[in-house]
Image (cartoon, rainbow, N blue to C red):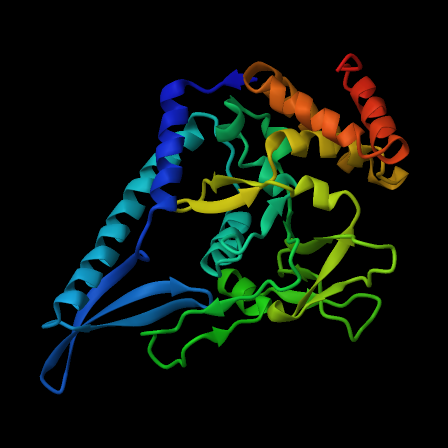
Length: 338
């Protein structure tokens, strides 16, 4: 694997900091006269897509300051696009256009701000800046996304204050958020036709799964997340994976701030999951082991104590479901000594 230079990692850290400290949405500000009075408005992206934001009269200093902040953030977003292009050329992983559009929509809906965690290959695509290495491109390819949440109270409530034609605090179903990224998204019915959908698919075949930790064997599948008008698929081991997630930037557009599992936990979780795959999922099993192997190599070089702590913690969860599976996977990837 190719190590990423300190200047590149610093550039990535600066990009993340800029996203974390943004105080206004990026938008195109324009002036409009109504009955002889000049007003400031802006085109901004919301949870439901592009909308017109009423800022206030041009004579109001607060409105002028808010318009200036929106315009300034738009200029910064253009600069971030240049930085992202440079990082991608230098070996940083990035989501596909479909994945990127989906993550943008989820970010606008503040789902990551409420604690939702991107898992699966979508998260792996964000790890280069966290582990300091360009990860192999073969392990980055995916046609699906997995969004995990430990909270069944997750909601999308669009702040419509100032958005023309709306009422404040309008609740937004998850399907509306997804359709702001791709209007062809639809919920897929499960075995229980009356249950809320936990899988969503676009016309191109891109799939989003909503996942929740399995708390007990009697959990219904899916578990209802009423605030999203969606369900969550309960999975074993997920609560361990998404404990103490970290922030990362998905390199799409002008950058998307997401939550992802800690890379060491992700690597160890893949060691466990690889041994749980049915025989018919050989390609997924191979990808599990490949992702675990590359992350382990990177972590041994840059953060070996985090890897050691994750392995120790996972093994302490139990023998049959954890330690034995970890041992078998490590042997398969030639790291039995860990």
